[in-house]
Length: 554
Image (cartoon, rainbow, N blue to C red; front, side, top):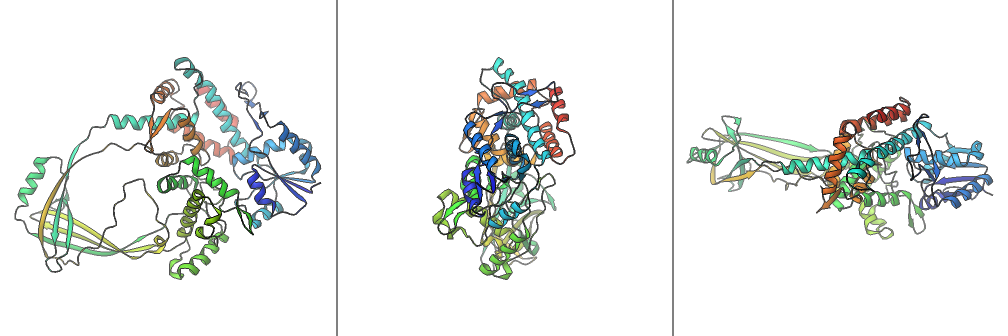
């Protein structure tokens, strides 16, 4: 008979925390949710305060019997499901099936699966936070109501078996809208003009870009315009009007949130969102290592905060100073977005001394890649800025102005370890310009006019769609991956060379839903609902108000 029973979601998590607790403690897994709304009907009593009708999930009968038996035998029960709304809801459902043992039950949470974090949580249990449970229920119930009201329209107009979701449908709309922008895009002609010039003293060459006339910026839209400019530049002298030398600092990016981790893993590693979250889950729950047992390598991977603990900050300082030297360390604090729930830290390694290469042999190739990304991003976030020497030159030629910029890195700082990726095409690092002086004449080697046409906005990738959803406040960290996975699985969108494009089915579904449910399938409504879920979690709103309003809208 165990003195203490600890219930977590997964066997991997159970194996990791077992070693931190005494032999009289038993750790078991619920295997995720154990109760949910029925699949065969709506399961919401709209007439009686929108009461949800939860049932035990099919196939979990034996597990529930086992949990009840273990609960009866234990003196204390600690429910240690994940530290977010979904985890709180699972804890509440577990407490419901163990209601006969309610006096024994407490809730514990930890942001990282380390000995100190787990033992501290066990010493400081709390009650289940019903506000967090209500926020999760609000989302679940509203999504069920929306799905049951909208899906029959698709069955009637398209085919049976199709389904619609509140957040998924808005994500599809974003992709369809972007595709229509691309299809309707009319390219516009424009020209750039480059002057290849030479410093006659050093014989070094530089490329200057046309800026404008009489100090004012001028855009070139046609071949006639460019020819007129070339004519006026014939036999012109190129004189250095101004030289500005300076210094530029580049600061590191903050530790990962769920969103930024998904975006960066997509850009740098080519991982899908689903793959990234699956690997991160494994790193959080624990990896087996000789002599150490199972070790949780990263903090909880569903977060929209960039905050880090003082202990983690101190560990990062010690590691950076020892590895790179004092001048590479800078104590940094990052502002968390005002919409962030900030329940726990940003994503970081749990142990600063477990460098990626030192444990590479214990990880799969994909685990190693993601762990290294997380580790390096976090360490870089506590390092010094990179410093560049810069030069900006303005060159006059018969009333026209050309400009050139150069920079050279003087101190790499955090860039020794990590540089953030981007969705845009990366330009190569500019080199330093020749050491030019004002009033100096430069020799023209060649004028190079270049015709171009404006391009349509790019299709979304998984990474850029996550960024858009986050910027528009649609969904939360835990919803990005399942949202995109769902609309791919339903064949509403498809992936073409990593770009997301609507299928014909997706266009038809989007048209029907936006015509019939204008108030629901829009960005503003969906973002507002997310903020109202937050208000439920923070005790500022009753969830029933949300149900009534959305039902009225439908």
